[in-house]
Image 1 (cartoon, rainbow, N blue to C red):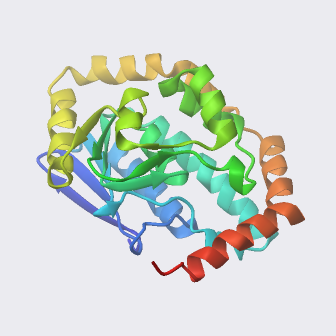
Image 2 (image 1 turned 90 degrees about the horizontal axis):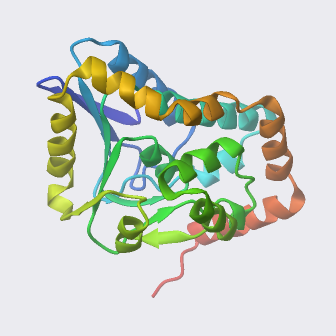
Length: 256
């Protein structure tokens, strides 16, 4: 795999996002993450999974520069795969914990939201969903995933304003479950996932799916009409202009 590293230790698998400094998400990463999750779920020798990133970044979200350059067919394929990835991870029946090693906005946050438990590194990091301010339509499935953890009122408000939370705010609002020193994030995640793994797995896994049944039904129901609306907004001139400004900032950061 080119964008992920996979390790297994005593029935616990760890997927490390490994694409550039910020782990920006593109079609290749999504495709590999879907395949890895499906492989881990089908492997009876694997009883739990951690998804983690690298120091400073869990994932900065979609690779804006690459995805912006996609043609309409490639763009449609990307967003279809992205929602498929969200559904595959949310449906993962085995214990799944996120070890959030740094910044986790937008797509990075969505990956973390699919997990059963989230440990985030202490530091000046942010997490949340900021799609609307950059002109991206938030599909209903993402709202349901966000509100599953935050509640509908907060999810509604935070999505509409594109609110990004610092680590302490994320803990207070239930977006993450635990804060750890950066060097201890992975160990804390492993401690939690192994605690889950020690329980009766038939009961644990079926209960997890029961508790998520309404959410999973919503994720499954994401349809072509919603994707079409996303695409229309993605290609709208005003959106393209906003995205281009964001890309220009990435290419020419202000020197302090």
